[in-house]
Amino acid sequence: MDTQAVRKAPLFAALDDQAAEALLESMTRTKVPRGQELFHEGDQGDSLYVITDGKVKLGRRSPDGRENLLAILGVGEMLGELSLFDPGARTATATAVADTELVGIGHQAMKDFLQQRPEVSMTMLTALARRLRRTNEALGDLVFTDVPGRVAKALLDLSQRFGKPVDEGVLVAHDLTQEELAQLVGASRETVNKALADFSARGWVKLEARAVTLLDVERLQRRSR
Image (tube, rainbow, N blue to C red; front, side, top):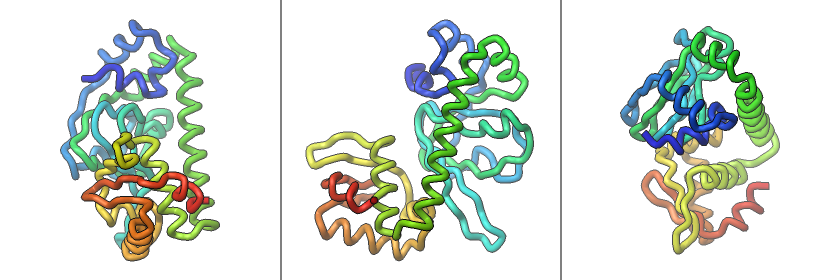
């Protein structure tokens, strides 16, 4: 396991190496193949997970079967933290979109650890506030931003977290299907594909299977506003 990758998580940010290693030893390692669920919306759960490799999508499903993608999480990011501090039903379904490895810790073990290391609570609150801020921004975008603007903003967000510089620009291996990308944006697949095709025709992006290369970040930034 890549310890340095785990140290990116807010859970470990306030810890020295010795304390981080001690916490890791108390955590359970889990592997989830691509397409498999880690937990399902409505399940009872009291564990927090940190992604050490791969990607996980968080989604909710409506009674008529439609799915809304809440977030895509990668290495060093946490999930399940709400059930950790408020044990109860999961508020979303977590599904691996790539072969994924995680470490998890239960409610009581985490409670005991926080009592010994209260400074970790502040870093976790910061992470929760950041997640809430992102959710609020997404809600605002649904009301005030058109679909192409939301697509541009989603690509830029994914590039900041998963992008790698290449000769042409920034390669973003997001591992999402066209349907999943549309769910993340909150629009139909047809509308999102139309926006992507337009960006491609303008020379702003190059589309690939489960990936995209951003060729003109500046124009995408302008379109996202």
